[in-house]
Length: 266
Image 1 (cartoon, rainbow, N blue to C red):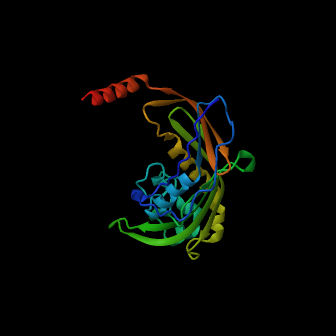
Image 2 (cartoon, one colour):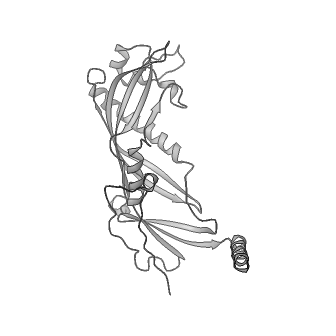
Image 3 (cartoon, one colour):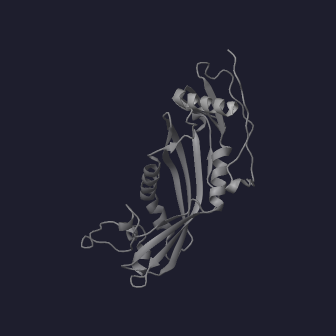
């Protein structure tokens, strides 16, 4: 069976100016990985890592949560009770903060300290591994002026495993958080023991939040001339292998051919 193999190299960068301070590892298509597939494409983990590096440099992953944030706004306060209509809030996780600043609304800002990292490994070597290091800053919100005062900081380190499902036009990732480590940077307000005790709940909340964001999937950038047919993905060492058949959009192909012929005639 004859075939055509094409190598290409590129990166994701801000305004196409390059500057990623690391490169891709050597890789190649596995020989005859699936003789039945019309198309095989291997993508190095350099592609998402260059995206995340440049995203980090412009604050792409920085996130703010405050009382107006859907799903989480109700818990952004130091004190809660049955009479207030909220049975759980951040003050329950951080009793010292609640004691020193009772009945205050809160906001939190997350910033990445360094670029997140994703590494592709075969399933028997751990699968797709993701790690993130960031900082969370907590602010008190003044009820009258709405001004915010920084009150505490903590670092957060997350490691996770990821699984992927494919359809003809969408990648649907699912995250399973492996570890979350919180370290206080304000020991007079956030006791380390309080952070250690809060990790289990934080893990569940964060995992649910991330998977809710990802549940709609990530569109696969495929030219409208092609439609992927039963795509499969396999995790290799430092790369993803996409194996698929594809159908041509015959109507669009005829339109493109006719347009080209008209140009030649003119």
